[in-house]
Amino acid sequence: GAVVSQHPSWVICKSGTSVKIECRSLDFQATTMFWYRQFPKQSLMLMATSNEGSKATYEQGVEKDKFLINHASLTLSTLTVTSAHPEDSSFYICSALRTGSTDTQYFGPGTRLTVL
Amino acid sequence: GQQLNQSPQSMFIQEGEDVSMNCTSSSIFNTWLWYKQDPGEGPVLLIALYKAGELTSNGRLTAQFGITRKDSFLNISASIPSDVGIYFCAGFTSGTYKYIFGTGTRLKVLA
Image (tube, rainbow over all chains, first blue to last red; front, side):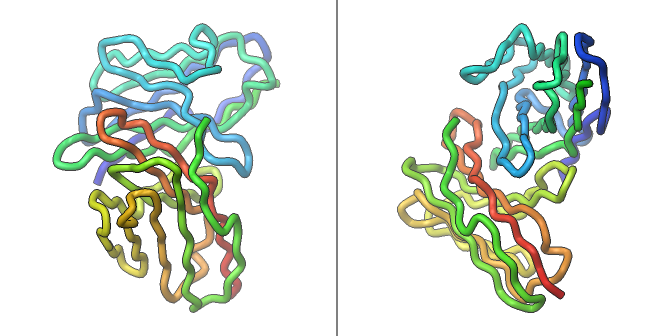
């Protein structure tokens, strides 16, 4: 199967600090990864598309300077929440796109961010 | 952002009953997928559908890709307590790889 990991699984930080979340595809290479945000009892909302070796593509309303994305290898994408504030507290989920005869996103287990 | 209409929003059922949920879109999709999400976890892929009219099973789960390419349904037969969770549909069009997610169906199974 396709396995995607995220680290950390949860993090608590002080307001104003930056937090980095890692997303790794463990058993396949992923040129494209995605970052989602999920609020309680709501669906997943796409934040940005992470492309290996190029700049990320952000969805409308998502601040690229606030949510820095780096996709430096075919198995790793990172999301850095800069100068975090309490309103950034959320569940962040990444996915990795496995391409081939079919194209399917496989999701990581998510990271719970709490900003105090 | 855009979301797919998924129904019902939530449902309580007795263990052993069959469950049906569906997802509709105003847009045509090339691929429909169904995921299950447990609390505090990421979504797990249940079934992927790639052709209009396709009917695919995965154990007690059966999903169909509507012939209009604007809808899909998921059936769960003989539900068990571990079926509890939130079920999301997702659709996408080839070339973009960006998923549009449904609003989710929260399933609770009464033993």
